[in-house]
Image (tube, rainbow, N blue to C red; front, side, top):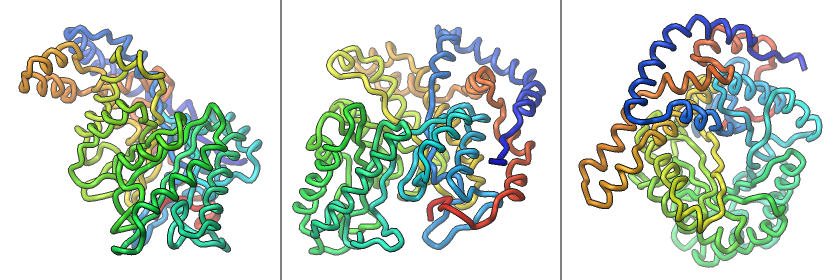
Length: 436
C-alpha cells in the first residue's frame, strides 16, 4: 500500500504549540475537581481506558434518500477505510476498533486484512449483517422481509448470511454479531403480526446455534423505516423478547436514533441493565426521527444521562453480585452529507468521551441520599453540577498522554490529509463509502 497516515511529528509539534494554553486550562480544572474531592489522576486513568468503535461505512460521505455529495478523497476500498480509521484513532485516541458491515465491506483476504489492521494499531468490533437490501444478482429477494419472510427459502438465505458474518468475524477476531432487521409492513393487514415475530425468533435461534461460545449476538430495534406501519422489531421490549428466546449470549443493542420522539432512552437503558440484556450502543443523534446526526450534536444532555445510567450501574454492588460483568459494546453509527466524515467521527468520539467523563463526576453518594429523601431539587442539581462542568481540558489531557492530538481537527486540517487523498484515490471507485 502507498497510503500514508498523518506524521506523528506533526501531532507532536502542534501539541507542543498548544501545550501552554492547555496546561493552564487543565490546572484550573484540576483545582475545581480536587476541591470536590475527586481524584483527578484516578479519573484520568479511567478515562484513558475508554474506547468506542467506528463503522466501516462511516468513512465516506453519507447522505439522504435524495442523494449524496461525495467528498474528495473518500475511500474506494476496505484497505483505504482502514487507513482512514487509523487517522481518526491517531488524532482522537479513542477508536481502535472497526465494525464491518457485510457484504458492503466483506474482506477478500481476511489474513491480509488482519495484518493491515495490526500494522495500523486497529482491531475489529461487532460484525453487522445486511438483510435489508438485495445484493446484485440475489435470489431470493428481501422485498417482503428476511428473517420474518413467509417463504422458508428466503428465511434460510438470511440465516445463512448471518452465519457467514459470524465465520468472517471469527477469522478477524471479532466477538459479536449485530442484527438489525428492516422487516415489517407498511399497510394494515399486510402481515400477521404474531406470526412475523414468531418467524424472526425461530430464524434467530438457528443463527444463535452457530454462535461461538465466547461471542454475543445483539438484536437492534427501530420503530419505523422502511416499514411504516408494523416494524417487526419495533421497540426494546420486542428486542428483549427475542434475546431471551435465544439464550444467555443474546442481548439488546440501543441505537440512540431508533426511538420515537421524546422517548426516555436512559430509562430504556436502565430497564435493559436490570434485565441483564444491555448489549451495547450505536451512538448518533436525532432531532425528528432516525436522523443519524453526529453524536451529542442535538441532545448532549440525553447522551450524558445515558452514561449516567451506565456509571451508576457499574458502582451498584447488588447488581454486580447478581449479574455477570459484561461491558456494553460501544460504536458510532452516523451518516450525513455535510461534514467531512473523518472530522465528524473524531468529534463524535470526543463527545461520547465527554458524556462519559461528566457521568463519572456525579456525586453518587449525594445523589442517592437526595433520591432516597425525595429531594427533587438537589437530586437534579447534583446531575447538573456534573453535566455543566467543562471537561474539555481533561479530555485533551487524556489525548495528550496517549500521544493523540490536543486539538484533533486542527491537526487534521493542518496535515492536508483530505487533499492528499483526493490526489491519490480514484474518485467513485470501489466499495460503498457511506450510507444514503
